Image (cartoon, rainbow, N blue to C red; front, top):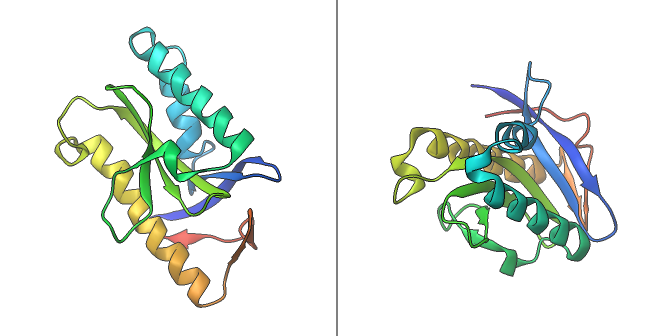
Length: 158
């Protein structure tokens, strides 16, 4: 079991972007993704496309059309829907106004389940999705529009 918190990446009237941050780590999962791929020549085009897609989301909101469902029907796991066949960034689309960015990587297998690294990132998000829903049910956090109340001080065990 791991302890995670949410780190705010970007917040404006349209959308709030957060990322999961594991206890003991300076970087959030999204920051790890950026560090891993920003200077990677092989995936440079895909990386830039993902960053542009995030800029569009910051501008317009986390609209459903920007994503492709990746997890199970019962969770909110999605990947940015870009033309890339190679690079995936996994996230939890909570609403049009709240997006939780995870980690990602090069998709070299037919499905993410066939790749232990990608599968791990998706499972982290699925576990976090469950505990976030639970935290809303028991009143630990509340989600209103683009705000998750009390999220800065909250920690979750996944």
